[in-house]
Image (cartoon, each protein chain N blue to C red):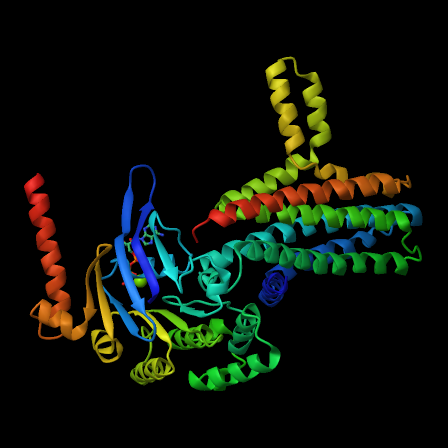
Length: 256
Length: 254
Ligand SMILES: Nc1ncnc2c1ncn2[C@@H]1O[C@H](COP(=O)(O)OP(=O)(O)OP(=O)(O)O)[C@@H](O)[C@H]1O
Ligand SMILES: [Mg+2]
């Protein structure tokens, strides 16, 4: 059974009268328990839109989304989900630990559990030396790290990460990769979006390629490479996208 | 319930650390302090002066704090995109709105108490400890400020900051001119216009109801029942504002 599922999920952004931007178009995704699933796609292809729809930050134009069989606004479901937004930005005037305490409270963790968890997470993302620093003095990578820690505060079953390694240094990237693999071993499900193909190649069990709001391809890396006669992920990425653009040009060429 | 408190506390904590609202508070304290510089007046006149200026300062600067505090509470969360993370936690959108209301109320309350304490201290220093009428005036000012804050909060769930500020100040001014408004309506001849403005007049929050300081300063009494009804009016209007905020925020894409 799919633990994350979308059915014909569609999002059209309405900008003024008659101006519509397609964010996502009839996307059907199924993500299984215990896998690491990567969403790839050029800028503006709808990755973030898809993740936001799953979590109820945006409302779909049509279609449905489910996590653990529950709709995006379900409170019970959110108890088991961790989310890292892209370019995370947090309360300027809090310190790292204070931010984590705040979220721990929202999840209803008791004080002892929260305390242990926060200590552990700060060590994990190597921010235990910056405990008293306000978040407004954090560097980009430090914000990304505290965001990752914050998304893990409730020890989530499902982790949704929007570009988790953007802004991290090479060591940070490697650590994040290892962390994700470790979480997978613990049986967690991870859905992430990324532009780093080599990262995705190394951690993801299955991938999806988005373009202009459409889901072009989904499957295991090997399977897709065979299907599209591609040599590696980069080749696959370029091929699927070019193929789609060509088809689009043909169809629009015919109609005009 | 606990989650609303956390959201509220977080809002309050940010406003304290951010310190911008302090500047407004400091202005209020300066004005209150300056009111006793009119030493050429007789002792009785001086006391009147202190009360008059202080009540006005507490109300006016309190309104500024309420408007900017409420404005910042919701819009900053959206602008800085902290709301993305917040709404993916197990928290209802209604928890968020009511939590923000708690937070804004706390901000208003603390600033109000500081200014009022300074004023009362001044009265005691002038050997004229405040009587119950002074407390009635302060109580009504406090409820007015809460109402102002909840209206700005409601507006912030569906308008831009700029429009919100304009609207809030417009309501603040018009809400204080209601007695003139009534006179104006009485003199109108066109029935339709009269009906329309009459309706508008009832819809606009009547802040002037909360203003009893002119009477108190000259030594008149205001009954408890008036105070009670006015507080009730404030709470009722505040509930409507909160309901509007909940309604719009439930549907808002952030
Ligand atoms: N709030 C919005 N209003 C209007 N259009 C939007 C909005 N958010 C996104 N879009 C549009 O929807 C499309 C998909 O955007 P989305 O943010 O999902 O892309 P993405 O795949 O995450 O891109 P990136 O790799 O740059 O993060 C883009 O064309 C974008 O312009
Ligand atoms: Mg994105």
